[in-house]
Amino acid sequence: MFRNQYDTDVTTFSPHGRIFQMEYAMEAVKQGAATVGLCSCTHAVLVASNKPASELSSFQRKVFRVADHVGVAFSGLTADGRVLTKFLRNECINHAFVYEAQLPVSRLALRLADKAQVCTQRSWKRPYGVGLLVAGLDETGPHLYYNCPSGNYFEYQAFAIGSRSQAAKTFLERKFEGFNKYTPEQLIKDALSAIKETLQGEKLTSSNCTVAIVGRIEDGTAEPFQVVDTKRIQAIIDSMEAAEEAPAEPSSMQEEDKGSDAAPMDI
Amino acid sequence: MEEQKWDQSMGGFNAASRSQMAEAAAGGEESQRTLYPYVTGTSVIALKYKDGVIMACDTGASYGSTLRYKSVERIKAVGKHSLIGGSGEFSDFQEILRYLDELTLSDHMWDDGNSLGPKEIHSYLTRVMYNRRNKFDPLWNALILGGVKMGPKGAEKYLGMVNMIGTHFEENHIATGFGNHLAIPILRAEWREDMTFEEAVKLVEKCLLVLLYRDRSSINKFQVAKITTEGATIYPPYSLKTFWGFSHFENPAQGAVGSW
Figure (tube, rainbow over the protein chains, first blue to last red):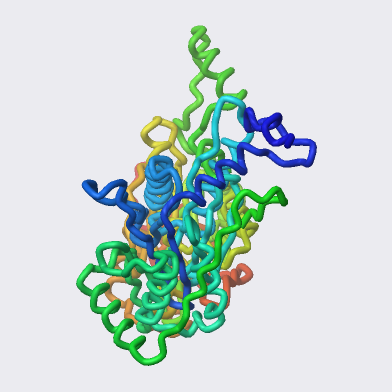
């Protein structure tokens, strides 16, 4: 009821202590096409579902390499995402220039979060309308962070954002405890299964998803962040479907919690 | 915050430097650059050995030709993984230690499992030295940065140097000042991969002795330091035995011809 009175700009609190403009920005994330991230103790994987704007157009690119050791995938206003990717790349390059070393992922996520926070406290700015999944490798292992338009960021074992991401999250909640021991192949498989949950019956093919992986293999060599080749993805999808021939698991399709007036889950 | 530190070490814009610049612009130009060094330390030598890196130097600081200070520590530990040794203007070395202190402090406060290794610190110092040089306001030092850090493929030893004009490189054995002329030839002939600590100390002492005999700004009080995966150890100062009983020293004027 009072929502519309206090939502004119981001520098106004509501009587219940909420900043509606920030919450509206987080809604924009929920409208974007789904993105999923997973982490094991050696690798981190990002999968984005490719939704073309129309039948005639190509899909929006949502997975970007930020540096050799880190990449992002985002949901929401992809234009904002592009601009933030440029910022992240700059941060990584500047650090590498001074220290000749890779910027640790947690410190990169912090800089992004601090930048996002600025936009929530200036009357002449608006929050970024994009949620980013930052996946990277540093000396403490692989990490996955979720950066929110509010300026918050959290580390995750696995996470999903965007439209119908709840279905993916439910799938991940069931399986995440085993992720640390996964091989990269298993990680990609589960990431694809999670994205599949968000497709709502549509068939998963290598052309409607983008997969990227970064990690460290057994002998200590780092595998840089790169998008996985479509042929390999199709092969993995085919092997997944072959395995599913036996017991077909009913996918839990839950309706997304939209428009509730309860305090927002800043997740 | 790291940008602020960067600015500071670049002689960045703050109230103090703005007033200096205003003064310069007004015509009362006081040179604020390092023109000559005043209190200087002499050679530092370092080499990689089996467990890490060993570094040594004397504990003297000269004021021109006077051996003014005799208990100066010119090798310090930096962070968890490195040692820095400096020759040249001692006040600039202290300033560098202050910058490194800020760097390592904020790195430590992150408490996220990542830490600055010797390579990062060497690279940072290179940027500082080179940028200061380009402003005609150098830090008048030659710095040796050595350390060991555990990487994904085991312990990685690192030894590098950077000087006041920003020249920097990595090597298995490094020396500054007179050490370049007197110690490096010895190190080139006798350094081997995987020396034990005792062998490394012997080699280092051999070099230090030559420097003591031949470098007039060196004193007979040395400090040896080592850095391994267990951390840094700086040993207490000690002196080396010297021999001056050469017959020529006994009656030095013997061969001199004079009319009075």
